[in-house]
Length: 582
Image (cartoon, rainbow, N blue to C red):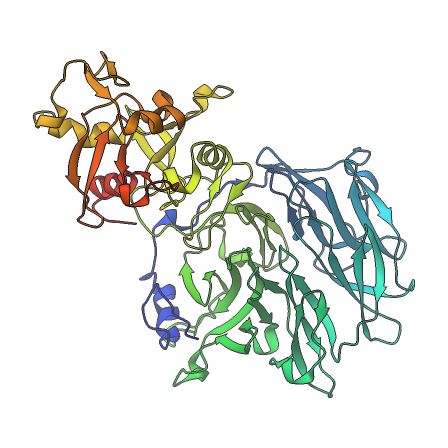
């Protein structure tokens, strides 16, 4: 299994990569990791934990880094985080709570959730029927909670805790209640995670032997109790995360900070690079948080201390670092997702990263070295290009894909679903980006076969999303070619002639055009049907151009859902506009 640093091309020169970061030579476009930032309505933190649902909501907790002292409940609504005041009905027992909340989770529909924390002893809190209430604790009163994880549907999950004898114990969510679990696990799991679909998981903690630390797999609802299948990890690990394939990541705390890759075949250190010829030259690298979605893509946050410049009598300050994780690969992204700050503040990524259960949304809580709150920032997949500029993620539930790194969100995901999805529009080839159309800036997203445009001026109407007139873009330069010349109305039955563009639509395209959205989706015909060589495979197909797309007839797929395909106009238009294929 190979790990690659795609941003530099060579994984064995991490020290050189760090040097470039320090010198600014690896400065990627600011559009690489933008997002909505909200902090003005929140009290001083830092951010302790965040939980998101699929429908644009979320909860979080800000307060001291230690598990004691005062804190504040915060809530995400309409893209903005706000403090939840004492007495707020939805905040329930957590609104105005003065003790700490350690961890929170939400189901995808946002209707259920759990939190663990303190408050007159160790407490479990449940979000149900629109409010937070206390729930039964399956452990002894003096047991201290450590970690919490729940599946995307909210029906299964685990809590780890430390009992009075300083041993790790676990509870499982069963029929809406937490019950003590006594599975024979030859390890004491401190941090724990379960995949969104609940079929996989990892626990990390103490092994059977003194000074031994291991990672333990969850397989079909049972923790693997075979010591031969428990994988050694350096020191006691920190947060752990897993995707639906059973692959995950964990971090090692500052004593020997590392980023560890977990797969059913074993555990191995990825960073610092074990193959480096001079590992002693690494800057002081401290990984803090790691989180991935169901498809195995996500973020690792860290700080590093650059090597001092011998020419200067000053010590360098800690610098923030973020890595985008994609399967076994990682990519360095710029550190400008948090606002500029003074050197005295020593900005870092000490706060959490949280994904919505569908994986389409992620928020970062960024704190300073002095544990002061900076901001909450919504992230999206890295976009390492100057043009077009990345736009803020659209709110609302979304779709993420194993095949491509970009997700569809909100009204774009809804429109994609309603217009034939993958068969008609293809995979997304960009995140949300900005484009100027007729002198007005819009948020758009390219798929393989189309460009979706978000028109907020049409909010509440069927026209809030429109397909770009990509067919026109390709047809306009060809208007003197035979198939694009105006044609008389066809005398053949089952043909429809459109006076607006003076072209016919008939067999074999008329049925597909009519049954898949007609005019709003495809627009008027811009050509007659004719044979054309396809750029993608150099084969010749019967095609017809419309204002918004090109329909291709594939008789080799007759009788299947692939008999008619839309041309790859999204790819063709993007390349024609920006000069490269994303």
